[in-house]
Image (tube, rainbow, N blue to C red; front, side, top):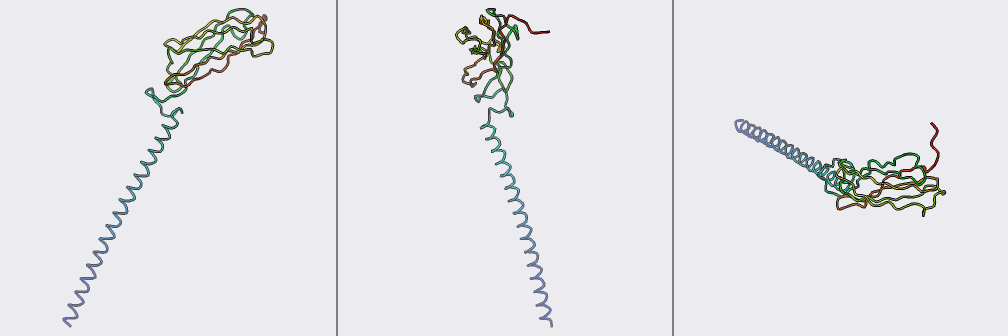
Length: 189
């Protein structure tokens, strides 16, 4: 009986030891699995950040989170292009064309830029050969430019478009056309 008791005590001790060892391995396995999950989650988050960073660099011409230090080539814009007097210009009279060229992302002026013009007939009444060539202008330090042109001596509609040919930092861009009516009459009140 003493042997049986001793044997039973030995099996119980061994059984408890195995239970403790198995519990320890389960805890270790759980901890390792948690660490692997955390590492996988961190890697996945880092991959997503890298992908969004690459996507931003790929689409750098978008208006995303770009800053004034942006050195990737992008398009400027003409924030204004106006004709004065407007909307009616008398035949053979001078009128002014003014505008401002700005960085589309930072909204800062694009200074000392050469601006050329497309002066066209927007109606069949004015033949293209009756329009003079508008001389190229240089924007000042505020991105502003101004030029004076003579209206054709025939009544109709003219269109003026400002053009910027680009630079090392900027793509070329054209303004929306500014239209003026060449007429001897004025608009009704």
